[in-house]
Image (cartoon, rainbow, N blue to C red; front, side, top):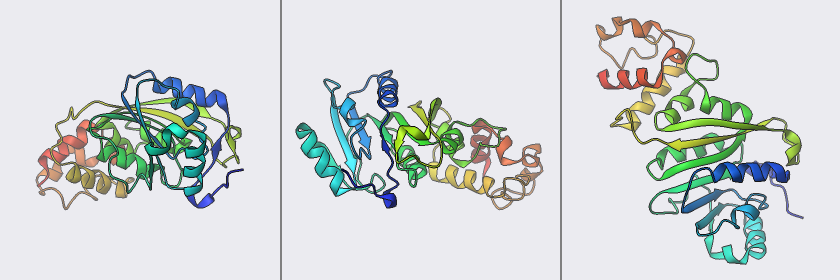
Length: 250
């Protein structure tokens, strides 16, 4: 029996039907290089290892799970990268696809890692806590729309695929889960400085119930702040609106 480590946010996926649905969603987009994040007990690995003609790597931080995977799948012994996905260097050169039943305690940080690697990550299929999955895919004007929605959707098409019940896991988490797909679309808004864009978006949502001229007053000249757009709240702005603000920031 594998040891469950709550400190690593581990919940083992046991529903084979869900595993198959995730892998089927993955195969809707062709790829040559595949990275599985946090394979744990290998619920998805079992199916991914059967995909022919790909370069398949895994990132796992838990030594016990690494030993289990290496003994269960001898062909993958040299393909396992030990460490945290938040700290290891990008394991591929060129474009690759990412998949994972992500540890919920770092799932948002994993998304920001995907954004960091955006020019290489063609597709990401991931399992998240349902409310996080909904926030990533949320549209402007909704209560779930926030920082992560804007920063992801600036570069990726998002698609909420399906819900996953608590009973699909051992032990069952206390929350429902959701599987989503991200598909890189390039840099259609021609954002030249992602760091500035990120600071703008995070500051705008820091006081999400207030008009934008309050949190953003330090970013724009007084005359610019008179524009009607600054009477709106952050959740009312589209990605395009935020890009427009980025271009007129001082």
